[in-house]
Length: 98
Image (cartoon, rainbow, N blue to C red; front, side, top):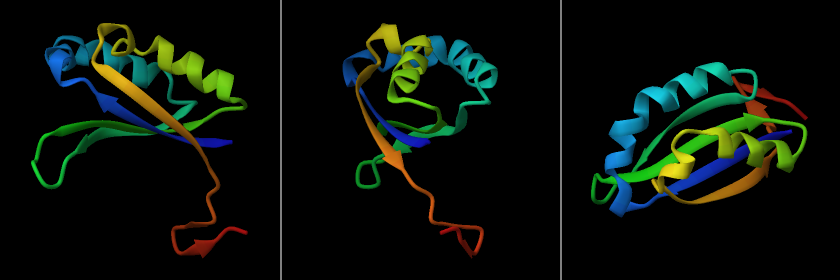
């Protein structure tokens, strides 16, 4: 299954992003089998950081939650919340997949 994760960041802990970015990027590289894509989100009105987005392939929601908890950003207070949605790809690269 593919999951879409929307992370909302806590502005009060924004300094944690810079402090733990190297460890966060290493974590992503170690988990390329499950994390298909990841990157920051930016508020289009204000231009401010708005959190992050991951596409994750995993067997269960429990696996996804375990992966989140291993991210060095998670225990720092940077992440205010995460919304996890299951996604079904029906179109990609100009092809209908169903």
